[in-house]
Image 1 (tube, chains in turn red, purple):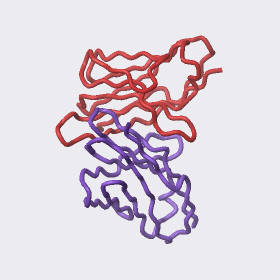
Image 2: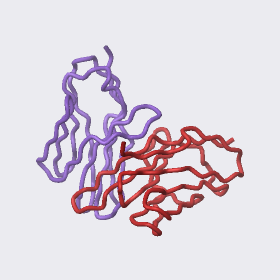
Image 3: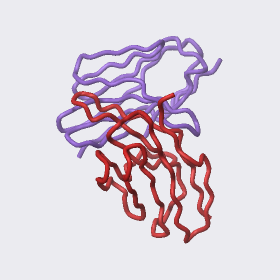
Length: 114
Length: 109
């Protein structure tokens, strides 16, 4: 089955530790995205990548880093510099054809930092 | 700056009671308005894309419409399984989607 997988579903870390969230897709999509979702707020874009070996900062990139070494994978690292990392993290992907901009989401990773 | 406002923030309906959700937007050069459904603790599920004013799309009990300033998600004779948070997003001239805060729908049996 084609889709987007994120692992793990729940993640717990101590303050001051870096943590990497996994995102893999087998949809053959070119573009991939990372969002953060907090209660009462809309989805906020952290980073996005339109092609392999290239990525751009979104609206809230501070304290996060990404890599895009393979088309299928777009891992997100939450660093110790992120001041409020506890949140629900969503990965998405989309085709970059003209007229087709739908983004499809993975199941999410809930990160708790104490 | 592209903006999306969804109203109401929350809505409670009785089973079978039809209603509409509103998504107002401002965007420079609309390249798509998107509706998603999100269940608690899960990722958003894509529902519809609308590209131009006057366009309508339907899926089961849901119908999405688009004008130059807003979109409506009409829910006809809802069932308890339609309970979820509905998200609206727009795409303007960039690769990025701008999302509203969502609207939590509860349908009581």
